[in-house]
Structure formats: C-alpha cells, structure tokens
Length: 430
Image (cartoon, rainbow, N blue to C red; front, side, top):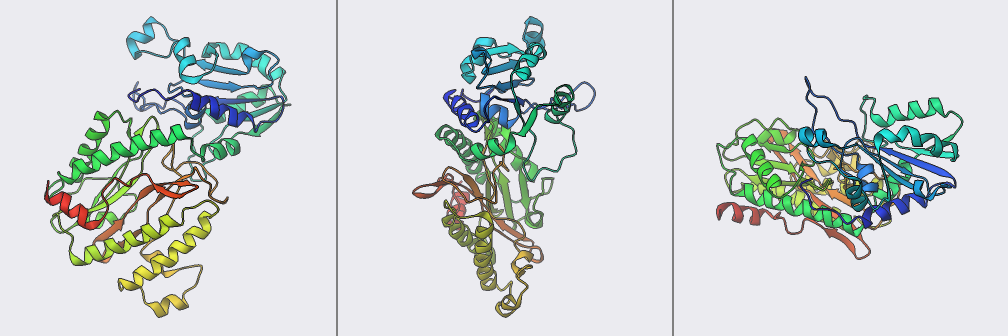
C-alpha cells in the first residue's frame, strides 16, 4: 500500500463493536472483493471490500475474516485467512502479507492460508447455530453482477441448510456510519491531499486548457501524496457541461468566460474525500455568475448548520429545499406567487436543483448508513447544494465534508478556499 499503516486498535475495536451485536453462539464470515477480469489476461486494479478493511485492516485480495466469539476453541474466535505467498508469487506479483505482518496489521492472533479455509469450515459450522453473512445493502446499489459474497452464500447454504442465516449488513452499516477518531484522521489526510490538488489547479486553469489536462494535474498531486487515487471518477466540467450531474468525459476545451465545476476527491487508506468547487476559467466571475455562486454558498452555509444529531435526512432535505426556493426567487429563476401555488410533491425548485444535498461519506464516497434514522454524532456527511441553469450555460455546485459532533457540525474542508473573492484572488496571484 502507498498509505501509512493504520493503528490496528481501530480494527480490534471495530470487531468488538460488531461482535457485541451478534447473537450467542454465532459466527460471522466476511469475504474480500473479487479480482475483476478486464480483457485478455488482465484484471482491473483490486480494491478491498470496505467491510473487510473496516474489520481487519487487511488490504489484499483473497482474504476471509471469521469471527466466532463463543467458539469452544479460543484460537478460532477470530481467524484471518490469507492468500498463500511464496517465492514464485513474490517474483510475479510482489510482496504479500506474511502471517506475522497480518497479525500486526489486524490485531487478529490466528492467521491461516486461504487454502486451509475449507478444512476449518466444518468445525466452525458444526459448533455454531447462527451465521452472519454479508451482502451489498447500500441502497444506491443496483448492480446485476453476481459477486463473491453472493456466490459464497449459495455455496454455504447448500452444504449447511439448517443453520440460522442472518444479515450482517444492518450491524456493519450501523457501526461504520459512526466514525472513530482514527477514521477521521485518515479522512482528514484524504481531504488535505484534495486541498493540495485544488490549490495546484487554480494555478493551471486558463482559457484553452483541456478538461482532461486538469484531471491529470489532480491525479499527479494525488499520487505524489500517497493517495490510492481518486475516490470516484472526477467531474471536470466547463461551461454547459456543468449541467450534466455525472459528467465524466472530461474531454472539452475550457473557454474564456465559462465557469468550471470541479467535483473530485482523493482516496487515502481507502477513505474518501468529496469536494466540489467552481472557478472562473478566465480568473474572474461575471456579475451574474457571482450572483448565482453566492446564492449557492448561502444555501451551503445554512444547510451545514442543520447537520446536527437528531435531525433526519428527509426533514433536512425539505428545509434545504425551502432555502433554495428563496434563493431561486431572488435570482429571478422562480416566481414567488407560483411557488405559493406549487404542488408540494413536485416543488418548482427541482427544475434548478434536482439532487439531494447530503450523503454519508467514509470508506466509500456514497457510504453506508441508514438515511431514515436520526443523524448521530460521528456521522460524516457531504453538503453539496447546486443551481443548474442550462439556458445560461452555467452550473454551480459547492461541497464540503461535514463531521457531526456534540459541539455542532465541523467542516473538515475549512482550509480549502471557497469564497468567490478568494478564488479570484488565488487565480490571479498565481
């Protein structure tokens, strides 16, 4: 890994939090992600399953974590199964975890090779009653791919049909959504790297530059600072492209007078940053561009103040919608009388602000968490209002990452320039 080692006590504590919610005489089994084939004999870069990393700290393919707190054999209460390494693998693929290295990284005392799993599995299964298994229950997921966890579930239930099988996802979602201090530390590193990239491109953006050249500058800064890379495909959208919410082609020229929407974030130690800023390609906003920019900035600030424990995403989004209505009326985009008569189920502001304001952030950029339960201290949310005006070739979105605490919301991106005047000053002093 490029990133510095994470304190293994994080993973020890995460396993304890999960185990505390397991039924007596239960086993929990977590599988690493698949190694995804590309073309020929190539594979896509491996990315560890976020739950496996969260519980073990092991960032390597072909990994299985077993937790069996009530095992009659103490050595089997926690087991890591790893890809067996040898001299041949070292020559062709590079270094893999040794047994001792895996123990040190994870805090798990019993570490075996993955080819030993099938010989240990009958002992584990025959002495347990309940089995916690994992599936992708991120409610944004809609992939039809039959992934490793699903294949494992079918295989296990075929051979052991009489056990009580339980979803691990509700527990893991609950504990992953409340970030520990060590996790906030890793996220802050990802955010600090993202800040470096943003400051770098402020000196680079100008008329005639290609969007992909800006993406290259960001990638360069990420990699040189030990990031895994991008936490999601970056959006580098100049002019009218900013009105395409998931624009990722990044293949157009940046023209004088346009505003560029930049939505990107570094991934460090598998933790995501998620930033959006908008900058004038020529170094100065027009009066109208700044008017829209400042309207979005005001919504951002008011929305951030509402990210507090006890609030709910549903109520929060309703209130943000009311703030946005006010700003859109002020910009001349909505008519106050028509807003009073609107169908509440189809608010008029959605024409110019059609997406949600916040989502969970953590090991995944759209992290797991229950959107229908009250917010809790320790949650990290994005806050990203936007106004999109296709007829003006203008799209403005601003986004920060916010930690909920007992003392109120904390902006983890407070050091990243955001005010329009500051952006202009930095671009013109470059």
